[in-house]
Length: 421
Image 1 (cartoon, one colour):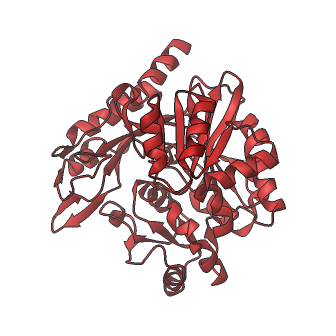
Image 2 (cartoon, helix red, strand yellow):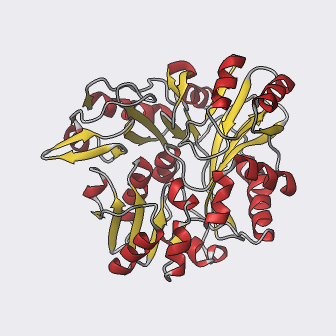
């Protein structure tokens, strides 16, 4: 099978890495890719938001599967164009991707399907915003209704900060604060059958101790030693399957990756948000543990044959990802800084630890930073403590002027696992 992956971040590098290890994948292509993806896939230049251009590239390559990584091409309808051109594609249609593209739409779907979520108001005027904030009280949760690359949410006890964020958005969803830990659960679906993956937890705040501004994610780990063993089955029954069934009932079947961001509250599981694609950096740790060949899973989603797929196989190992970010991230990042130590990680830490590129590019013989989140250093181990140790040992080898990373990824969970053991 020839596979074309669309995107150029660490999520796409994780996808490409797993696909490159799949014996059924005879050729692997990525557009546009990055400096790390170039090591496992042939790269191509394409406008990822141009459905016709992506379909033309798929035709040129005679792709047997097209995998669309980021949310923006999905919301732009790129999957529709590729599907209409006759190619199997992993990713929802434009209409179904509105589940991520509009939080108000997602709330409506959940209300109809009976999916548990936070109470909320959709606001378009300062008066509506003020009324909603007063109704819920602090801490305030204000979400940009549209796509915001994981940074459109403000959680604050400062009402003026909440109002300022709302004023910067055309339409916002203001909702009650959900207590309890957050969990990310991915599910692959063909519009009818839903196959959940293993849960992960990510770290949104920029600094240790969950301090600092929200980011696109500074690290993740899997499995979750503190979670209820029935969590995945419960979420499949109460969240994932009802949502997929409701979208099909509306005539907009969802085929691809359904990502449920969950809060495990004192009143039970509540949905924080849905995404229509793999999450970053959770993908890095989830795929590190998946033993089932990835291409067959994604192709079954694209072809509507998930019901015929064998149960997924998982490694018992734990996985941890630590994100190395550019100077000033999540503000405007500094780019163009040389990255050192990549060869040392490959030589000293493989196969248990490896680097997945996010915002990088090749500059002559050097690899330089080209975005806010630059690298995802991923490691596996017999338990979270060993995976953490390996991940941070690899991080220590990397040089990037002005970079920063969190030092507490999976620390509490590793302690929990030790206590449980």
